[in-house]
Length: 147
Picture 1: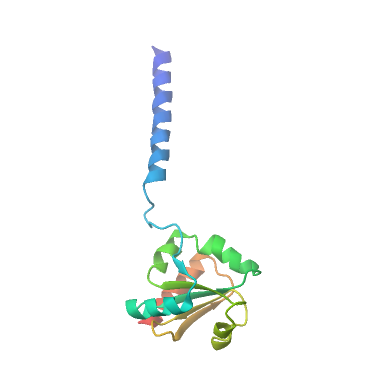
Picture 2: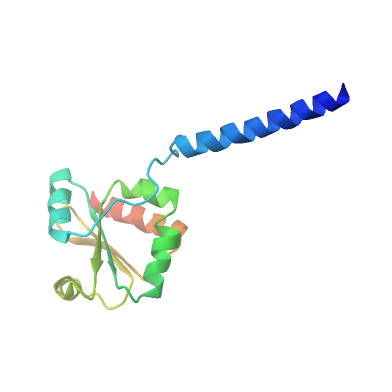
């Protein structure tokens, strides 16, 4: 009898783990998306922001920038940052390829995240890397200034 109970318990445990794995793969997370919905077309994003009356979050990066890659890996993958990013129109701008934007907004280092109103006026700026907690504060500050 004792042997059957152990086999049953082991089988039940294995089944519970299997169900949890299947549900985890099928049921979306509470935040829904697993990444920020980035645009790479600044003009299109600006029009979208104006129409939706949302501020823009412009990540000015370069391919050679180490801290830009860290933002992508650590900050922009945080579920809280992803969730709050839905209140913005998000766009990535390659500073090496968009010299006009770099000049217009006086970008002096990378990464620089420029927050713009829905009318494309600068309302807040982050220069350098910020981890998720600090970046959330910056996003909230930009939202306050966008009102």
